[in-house]
Each structure stands twice: as structure tokens, then as C-alpha cells.
Length: 98
Picture 1 (cartoon, rainbow, N blue to C red):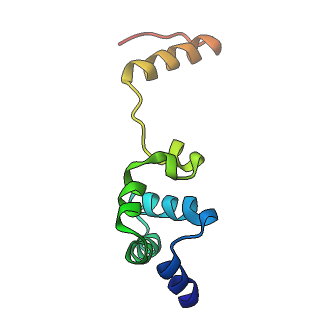
Picture 2 (tube, rainbow, N blue to C red):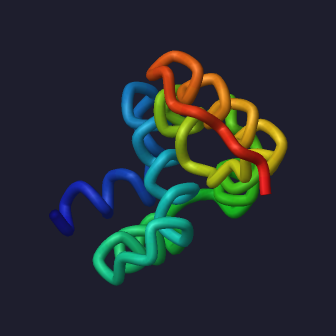
Picture 3 (cartoon, helix red, strand yellow):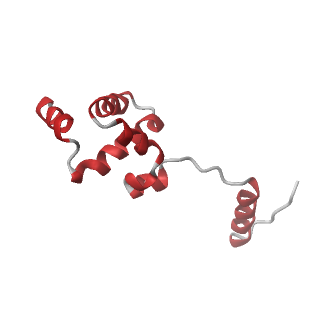
């Protein structure tokens, strides 16, 4: 592992690993996982600080599946109620508003 870290520190991340590194750096604080935060800290110490800053803000750098699903999206209450009414109609359940 140290050999790889030394190589990355000396020559920068390999092109095929940039997305992986960016994803780990971006996702670690959002996942609340101590091991991922240690990986992030290690990567941040050996990678260019501009690259690290870019990882936190530029979703285009990270894995597209992770980028789409990493942030919690709050659904409007009106959408939830509308969907519940639709489901009630589909299942022939009487809906009585309160």
C-alpha cells in the first residue's frame, strides 16, 4: 500500500482511478463511516488540493450512480399526499380527508 501511495504522491493519480478517488473523497463525509474518512484523509494528504476541492463540489468528477443517489432529497408533502391518494384509488380504498 505504501508503494502505491508513494507512486500517487509522486506522479498523481492514474487516469483510470481519478473517478474512484473523487467518489471516495466526496462520499466519505456523507456516509458517516470512520474507515471512509480515514481513506479520505489519506487521499487528501497525497493528492493536489485543487483536485480535492473540486471533488467536493463537482459532481461530474464522481461516479454517476453515486452522484445521483448520494444526497438526500426531501419530497414535498403535497407530492406524498397525492401519491397516497393515487394508491388508495388503485386499491379501491376510501379516502376520507381529515
